[in-house]
View: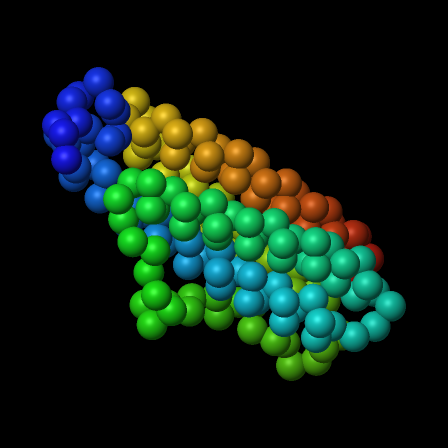
Length: 169
Ligand SMILES: [Fe+2]
Ligand SMILES: [Fe+2]
């Protein structure tokens, strides 16, 4: 392979360590999105009751968006000469998005979603900072994804506010 000089940013030979660091952060982001897809599928189907409808529909819509994020992270891992990990490397972390005891417990779901989105927001802010001045493309991609997650969290904070106003949360 020809020498990739320093004018080539994150693809430059001299930036290999930085590139590997970013690839590891992207792998974590990829798994977070995959787990969120799993959690949102179950939480968009399990809930019972009239009040659950809005939450269920909102999560159904998010599933496709989170799946798209996972694909974007995977693509970027490859572009940075990494390998998208296989399923055996997966380790679940979202204890807060497990099915509640009662399937009418919508507040449990809303709080779990807010926690998942907050985790994504924190990790993606870190990725954006790590990319600064060296990997503009990943940074730009993750900024857009971060915007989606901020929107998701705000929406669910609004749902929680309604339950709090009624003394149900
Ligand atoms: Fe996402
Ligand atoms: Fe999200």
